[in-house]
Length: 190
Ligand SMILES: C[S@@+](CC[C@H](N)C(=O)[O-])C[C@H]1O[C@@H](n2cnc3c(N)ncnc32)[C@H](O)[C@@H]1O
Image (cartoon, rainbow, N blue to C red; front, side, top):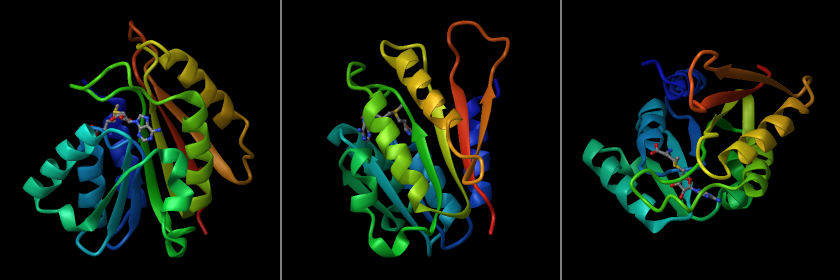
């Protein structure tokens, strides 16, 4: 089945080139972090955020196995600290930021992203983007709290000034049981 996450990977890879800077705002098991690390190449840099040590441990292992660990900085911190944590010199030079909301698969399903901190982090992510950069957000409405978070993020994104950012939505129209959906926030090219 073609997943929305594949499309998030497509959009972020398109926005990144060798030597680019990318952010994974929800590291989890590290699949997206690895994707970003491969997309930026050996001279690039990925910053990853997660509040759970288990997620960072699994991701460190995944990155080491793939031989890309040295191009990734993992922060055990909330993505609500995104702008303050990233060095000033990369502000305005980030090519892609990925959010993959919800809980850690294979972890504690009661620890999830939350609407307030997610929207705060998204606001910060937009300020970090370079021209032509993208923020992707995969929304899961199927777990407790997920629908409210998806609504909060969608409402926030729909109200963004179209002169500053283009907001696109990619979602299933014919799948039952609250399938995931993707929002992509594109800053205008230079
Ligand atoms: C669906 S998982 C991410 C999947 C991941 N991108 C991957 O490729 O495996 C969501 C992650 O968000 C993390 N999370 C929850 N609240 C967070 C926050 N405030 N800041 C950063 N990460 C958070 C959870 O700990 C969980 O690992």
